Image 1 (tube, rainbow, N blue to C red):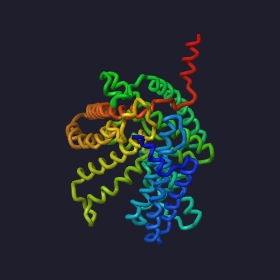
Image 2 (tube, rainbow, N blue to C red):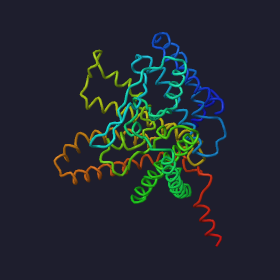
Image 3 (cartoon, helix red, strand yellow):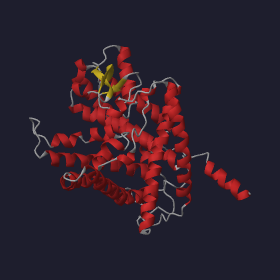
Image 4 (cartoon, one colour):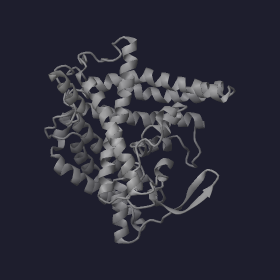
Length: 425
């Protein structure tokens, strides 16, 4: 079954669906700035939810003739983001009060302590003027990671790395980001050339785990590197563009703020080291599960560990749905026409992660707490990367069999020019 048939439920081009959906979501966010009318406005937002979700599905599955898998991926990520914002503001927000609305954090002053310069923040009140409400709406709508388009501001749900990203100047920002852009582009070009030209067998559901063990490990590491570079590259382009157009550099923090290879645990990997592009989306979608696990007085029915496991399972389930949707957005070929709507390998990968987190906190951590610091760090790192490589093979199966490497995303390829020149000589 071709999941792109979903787009025919509400057919429209990206030029129409993107601004229309964004405008409807913006209207819903704008209404949250009127606390005096919260009861009546929540019903209006609920009424807007269904048509907005239908139009957002047209963003995720555009009828346009997009020739490259990368364009389908970008379209479905944009559509999924807008869909989750509708769920966030209109559905989950229906049961929340005004106090749950995101607020701006502004740097009040910078204090110096033994760890260096530490900013002090003040929580800004909700805007009350028309200009303030419009600024709040636009900034809220387009902030995926908690950065604000206003200088020295961020959102109260932003991670520490996003809040504390303050380049000294535009010159420093462009110096670092342009250098990173060139390095990322060249590395991504080499990896994409190899992965797109490898003779993948898409007629089987497991093109990676059907290979010999050494090749499974090698391709898992290569695809991990490509995912890291690919997500970095997309945001690098946006960051350089927005800062060139006038946004303050603090509004455009890097996607990966620190060296991912220094990660010491699976919990640290998923919560701090991997990108936080969808973190807010996943946490918001897991809130109904959290509410069901609490009594009326707010106390949990289960232990904290069990509650955290169930919430983690819900978050990774939402992530699995997003990645399955991304895979389904790419048109099927005669080779992978056997795929159904649900690709099981990616489901296995994402739903295995909560069990890895549970094993880490329940078994591995108590076992290694008594070890010397150096030994403890190495044991936990070996566990982390062994787990990620082992389960990552399933992710690679699903990602490749859906056709992500059916065509190159980069229009200009230095590696192809180099090989063509070498061949001609």
